[in-house]
Image (cartoon, rainbow, N blue to C red):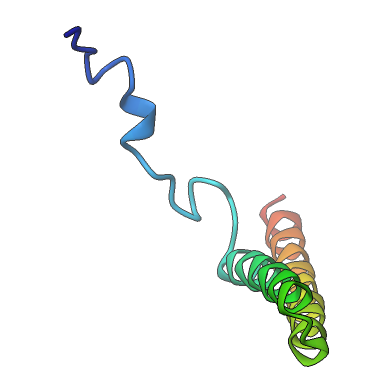
Amino acid sequence: MRRTSRARFGYLMHKPTAKELNMNKDQVKGAAKDIGGKIQEEAGKLVGNKEQQAKGVKNQVEGKLQQHVGNLKEAVKDATKR
């Protein structure tokens, strides 16, 4: 059995934080809500539940809106640094 060194796969050990990715909380939460909404919409389609599909679409819209708010905050922050 061959062993691989940790250094070779070290990139798998570290999970980057929001700051390292240059994302603010609104961007992260918005992305999570968008993904959750997509999952909820697909689950609703799978079981034939129109209400769940609609809630999923609503969550996607809310998530995208929150991401855009985060993008605006980042743009203002970057503009004030100059």
